Length: 51
Image 1 (cartoon, rainbow, N blue to C red):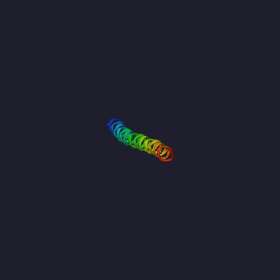
Image 2 (cartoon, one colour; image 1 turned 90 degrees about the vertical axis):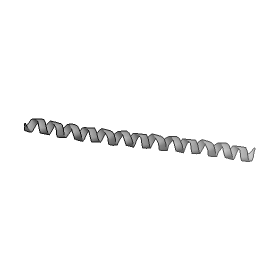
Image 3 (cartoon, rainbow, N blue to C red; image 1 turned 180 degrees about the vertical axis):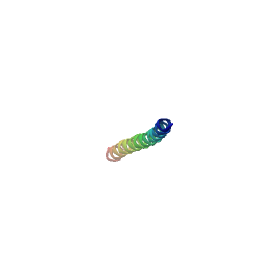
Image 4 (cartoon, rainbow, N blue to C red; image 1 turned 60 degrees about the vertical axis):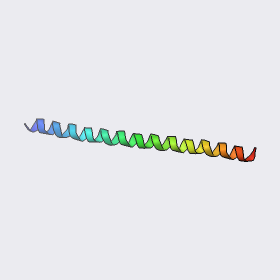
């Protein structure tokens, strides 16, 4: 019985860790896309300003 409870506890902790990692990955990819879009927008804006 102790083995089953320990296994279920470890599975729950792994599941929580997977959800945290998934959320963190989405946030990092979203920030990267936003930053990249801002850099491209800034470069094109400055290029348009001077040409």
